[in-house]
Image (cartoon, rainbow, N blue to C red; front, side, top):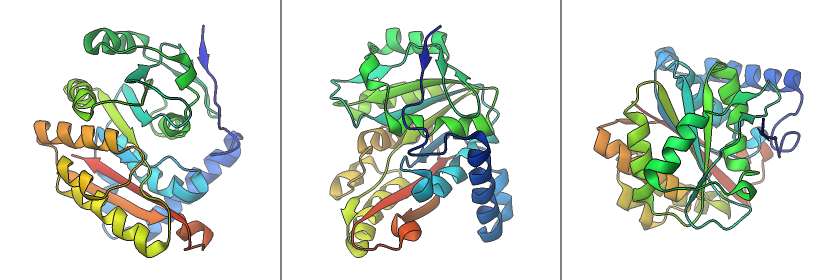
Length: 265
């Protein structure tokens, strides 16, 4: 049985189950203390956009979306993120059996992975699957959907419309959820970062894929555009859940990274 071993545990997120659970508890305390509309926490969604930086910086933002995804009770979650380590021509779908997390392994839905590969002409490039953009989502999924199965998809040079076709097909199954992983602008001062990130937020809030090309610098822009195309076709309504920058955690406003989470209802 092949295992997709955790590559960034202890770096991007705690390797200790107790530390991880403490971090999730802290995120939820912050959320429940700050939220203006408590009923939001009962929202059900099967499609979210989340960030993928270290949990210290973006974990709160991601946690909001994963908590709402957990309300859906889906049986499988497909996590789609950009490749940062290796060049990919297209998209790779993991055909391993288990995904390791500090909270316990998640079974990979091999049947669904195989179906995606065959139906959409994709492949499996093992070297692409030490990717943090997808991995950092898995402990959240294990926390909020502990009995679910997962599929990891990592894309490189890919057409958004191709990924959109996959997302639409997946979301037509009411027991399947989709997680799109992206950070926003990188290493601008706080004012410039917020201006660039506002373009991304506006595009998502209006479900306007074309607007992403007016200055949005999300590293996972291909995945976000694919999600917006799919949301438009499926008549899903967007909800921006949280936006912040690394400065909220570090205090350094000279070179920040932007983070957003959103849900589609």
